[in-house]
Every structure is written in structure tokens, then in C-alpha cells.
Image (cartoon, rainbow, N blue to C red):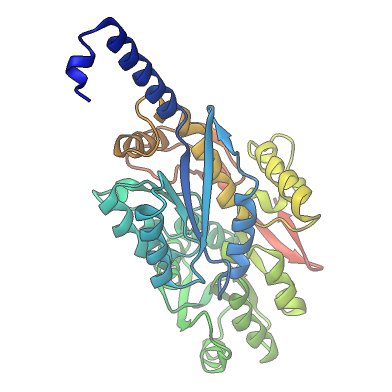
Length: 390
């Protein structure tokens, strides 16, 4: 059909106008595809499962647009996370990616999302995921608190409790290394002396050798930089060997599975956490209490009383960022296009004063986390539960 000739007649012009209107209406209702990769199996499963559960609670329509969530499991494996990211971008044509669960996986995905110019919201903690905001990381955001923020909380608590020397053991990957570096800075500020530095793998079944070295250092406290249930292993071994000093964990253990696996050996443990973990214990004046409690109510209504964890909260906050950013991006472009992905990236970067499960988000071109000190509290494990430490 010759469109030029068709448009020359009144009837032809009317047909073209109708076709154009139909196409515009179809484009206006294009779905938004959200790709998700989580560690629902493998060593990080206790983190990934609540994240995967939380995805089911996210809005199915935002600003009149249908939202499709395509969820894949990377089995806590870096190679699988990269493969998932590529598959979501090339096959599912996603507009944004949420994931992954762990720091190594998220770091590995950065090249993939930057090459395709697809915004990504990580649920892993390391500041290296978003800092510095360069040509690649301008496409990457994250929702968990930075390690330095939580390191400072630990160092402040240690110093106020008379601790002078600290032994460190962390994962033998980017998570453990990042924590050692950040805690080293915080320890220096609080005049704490780090007297031992050990590593272990996420899938190790024994850390006896490392534990003996930690105990030989005779430190006032031990900091274990691990996440999920694998972080219980060094602590159980320390207690079995008779260590009586204080033990600190990171916010990577804030879930019920850690309590279950650790049992009596994790009693008395101190750790920093997002406010969502102890939302019911916060005062009414706490700026995060209402938004954190909203997530707790939604998750426990779906999955049972006492099932909530901080990790699902990171997924929830990713959903809140999208809910805030999508209406803004839609003013510029339609889903399924490079222009929409760019507009969505820009809109996430402009989010201000957004209350989430873990804090108040204020993004900027140089800050792709956007959390401040309102996003952290200290808690203690008492009688198998989390106890807020004012």
C-alpha cells in the first residue's frame, strides 16, 4: 500500500489517523518489565528467599502501567547472576533490574547493565556497588546501608563499652574485604586496635584454624563479617573453643534463619541493623517507624508472624523507588525503549524524602544509596529475638 497516496484522500487520511491513534493508545499501555535476580538457593538463600517473597507483594500497576516481574534464581553464584542479567535484558527486554542478593554477584552485573544502559537496583551492601558514580555506576543504585555506616555504628558501640582490641574474620570475597577496609577506618576513628584478620568461604564447614588464630590474639571482641547462616559458623566455633569476649556481627545476619542455626551460641551478639528489624520497638517519633511497620505488616500478613527480615526490606525499598520514579519517567518516554530506561534512571536519581523499610531515601547524581544515619540502629540477640539498643 502506498501511504503517500492513501493520505491524499479524505478517507485515506482518516484511516491513517485511526491507525496512528490505535498505535499511540497501544504504546501508552505498554507493560513495564522488571527483571529480578535473587539468590534463592545456595549459601545466600536465607537472604534471597525473603527478597523473592517480597517481590510478590510489589505493585502490579504503577501510574496506570502494568508491571511484569520476571524473577530468576542465581543460586548465590556470580556467573549465574551475570547470565541472568544478560537473559533479562536480551530476552525479556526488561526496563530495569532488581538484584542481586550478594555483593560479588551485584559487582559482576555492573558491566552488563551499563553496556545495555539498563538501570539496576542492587539489594547488596557494599559501597563499591555504587561508588564512585562513574560512567558505569551511573546506572546502578542500591537499597542496603553502606558498610561504613554500619561499621561506624559497631565501632561506636565497642568504644562506649570499653573495648580496645578487636579480632576480625570475614568472608573470603568482596563482602569480607569491603567490611575489613571500612571497619578499619571506623576503628581508627574510635581508637580501636584490630589485632587479627582472618577469612573463610561462604560454603566452608570448618573454621577451626582461623578460630585458633583469633583466640590467640586475645582480643576484647570479635567482629564476624559474613551474611546469612554461614556467618554462624565462626561464632559457634568460638563459643565451642571457650571464647568469652563480646561478639559482633554485621547487618548481613538479620534474619530468623541465623537465629535458628546459631541457637544458644549467638546469644548476646551485637549487630547494626535497619530499623525494620525492630520496628515495633521504635518510638512513635522515629521517622522510619511508620514506613518500616508498613512493610512488616504486609510481609507477615502474607508469610506469617515473625517471618520478616531486613533482606526482604531491601527488595521492598527497591519497589518503593520504582513506584516513585515510574510516573516521572513516563512523562518522558514509553516502556520498552532506551529513552524510558534513561528516563527511569534519571527519575530514581531524583527521588527525595522517600520513607522506606530501612530509612529515608534522598538520591542524587553523586549518591546512589541516599540513606543517612536514620537508616541504622543497634540490636542485641536476647532469648532468641532481636532487642533494640537505644
